[in-house]
Amino acid sequence: MQSAALSRGRSAPSTGFDSNAVRRLGFSGSGRPSLALAGVVLLAIAAAVGYFAFPTYPTYDSFYGLVWGRELLHGHLPNLSVYRAPTEHPLLIGFGALCALVGQGGARLMIAGSIASFVALVAGIYQLGRLSFGPVVGWIAALLMLTRFFDENLTVQGYLDVSYLALIVWAAALEVGRPRRGGPVFALLGAAGLLRPDAWVLSGAYWLWCVWPRRASGSAGPTEDEVVMNNTGRLRYLALAVVAPVIWAGFDWLLTGDPLHSLHQTTELAGELERAHGLSGVLGSVWGFAVRIDKLPVVVGALAGVALALWLAPRRALLPLAVLVIQLGVFVAEGAAGASVINRYLLGASAVALVFAAVALGGWSMLRRGSHLRMAWMVAAAALALYGVANVLESFHVSELSTTMAYHEDFHEGLAHALGTPAVKRALARCGALSLPDNKLMPDARWILAGASGVEVAARSDAGSEAAAGHSGLAQRLARGSVAVYPLGAAVFFEAVVDPGDNPRDQDPMAGFRRIYAGQYYAAYANC
Image (cartoon, rainbow, N blue to C red; front, side):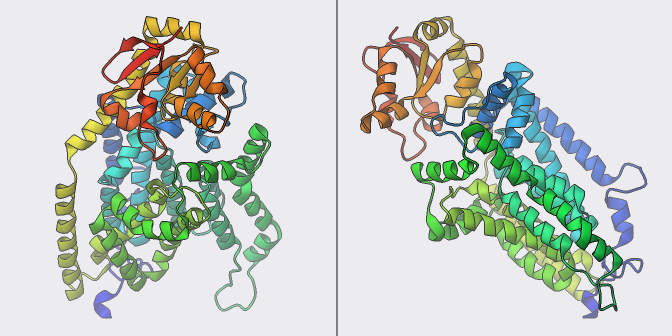
C-alpha cells in the first residue's frame, strides 16, 4: 500500500497531511490573514449585500420567537397555549427578546442573525473538513455547503436550524482540533441544545467520550490525568452536558406547569398536522429527504466518502462519522416516537455528510504525489463533480429562488400594509378581534399589531374545529364583531391552504361582513 501511504509531509507522518499546505491555506496561528480567513470575510460581505438587496422576513417558528421574546421584555410570561403554537426554543426566545428591543425592525434583525449563522456554518464546515482530512477537503466541503440552496432558503427565512447547525459543526471542529477539549465544546453543544433537543444526545455522547478511561501507552493502569477526571472532572462535565435539557424543562415548567410540555406539544401537533408517520415512515423518508437537501450526486459521494475515509484515515474519520450517525439516529428515533417527520430535521446529518462527500472529491490530496491511485482518484472525482454540476443545472433555477424570496417579502409587507390601513385600524379598535384563515399568519399578525393592545388574534380553522366539537364560543365572538383577513392570489397557497387539515372554505368571506380593504395579496372584511 505504498501508493496510499499518508506521508505527504515528513513533518507530520502520523496524520498524513502536508503541514506546509495546512499553514498556507488554513487559519494560521501567526496572526497574518490567511486565504481561509479572507474567504470568510468575502462571504460575510456578500451575505451583507444580499441581506440589504433582497429583504426577507422570519418564518412561523421564528416569528413566535419574536412575539414571545417581546412578551418577556414587557414583563409577561410567553403564552404557549395559543392555537397550534410551535415548540418553544429557549435560545430563540432569548434572541427574539434582543431583536424586539429595536421594534418592528427586530424581524429583519433576526434574519441578520440567521445569515451570520450561515457564514459561521460555512467556516465551520471548512474547519471540520480541514482538520479531519486536510485543506483540499475543507475547501470542497465549504463549497458544497455554499451550493446547498435548501439551506440558504432556510437561512433567508430565519429558520433556527441554521444556527443549530453552525453550533454543532463548530463543536465538532473544536474537538477534532484538540480531542477531549471539554468546556468550549460543551458550551457550543449546550447552546445548540437550547435550539433543538437533538443536541442533548450529542452532549451525552461527548460526556461519555470525555470520561472514557484512557490508558497511557505501555501502562496497565490509569494515568494521573485519568484519576483527576475520575475524581473531579466527571461530575463537572456531567453538569455541562445536562444544562440544556434542565433549562428547557425548567422553562416548560415555569410557563406551563409541565416540565415535559415541549415533548407533549410536539407529539400532539405532529399528529394534528399529519406529520407523524411512525418508524416505517421515517426510515422511508431518510433517502428522499437526503436527496432533496444535498442532491443525489452529493449523497452518492458522501456514501463513497465514508468508505474511503475509513479506509484511508480511520482515526480521523471517527468523530465526524459519529456525529453523522448520532444525528441520523436521533432523526429516526424522534420520528418513531411520534414527532414530526419533516426534512429540516435531517439537516444535521446532511451537513456533516458534506464533509464525506468532500473526501470523495478531494481525498486524493492525502495520497502520495505521482501515485497511480492518486491519479485514478482525481479522474473519478472529476467525473463525480461534473455529474453534480449537471444535476444542479438541470434541477435548479435562480428565478425560482428569487420568486420565493420576493413572495416572502411581499406577503409580510402586504400584511403589514393591510393591518396598518386607517380603515382596518379603526375597525380593529371597534371590534377588538382579528381572524385569519388558520395558524400560518397568526405570529406575523401578532408581531405587526404590537401597538394594538387588546386585539384578539384568532384562526377561523380553530373556531370551526371548536364548533364541530360543540364549543362555539370563538365562532360566535368572531361572528359578533371582528376583522377578517383573507389571503389572495399566490398568498393563498403559502399562507392559507398548506397543511392537509386546512379547509378552503375558511377562505370564504363570512356572512354579514363588508370589505374594507383589498390589496394584491390580502383583503380585509369587517362587521363592526
